Length: 241
Image (cartoon, rainbow, N blue to C red; front, side, top):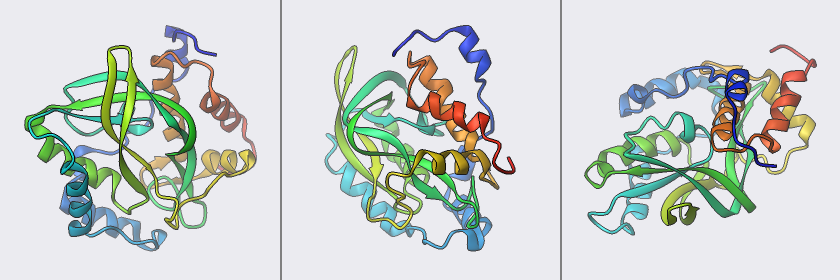
């Protein structure tokens, strides 16, 4: 069911936590992140050269001089950490958002990993199309790739997005099913337990879910799978939080 968000809904679910900070998304910031992750992160990071080669392979298909659209479906909706010229509600068909990536650092630990969302095959997903002005594409996508392609758990992909103003061609980040962090389709009880109890240096896993629900409310999605998941997480009494 889709309903218009109310002020009560936003007061019930205020945004919590700081999230990723732009000032940390430098090469020096990534080095500090690697050092802080320590032994919690055993899956490696992409090198600067690997990340840059991946970015270039995507941008080489983008018409020179045009603005670039990015589709956000999770924290990119509420904390993109890049300079955005326009935000536009949009739907992506053929992919759905799911907590299907383990997060053993940041919002979890190796012993109790958190979970992160990605786009997996099938269904559809409502989110936000973010427009980067042409003159800022080079620098802002460097920041974006440091944010999204730290470990290679995502695959950037060109997609068609549907908005009230018409079709948009843009880039989004779908799950890399071959990556060791890919969790597949987890039982609901497992999702709830990890989201309710996992926390790390960046905060609690549940806050990531919470903040996404806040912004789905703003898009007019006031009763969806993530709302029901959040309700279960908030009721969870199975361990420390």
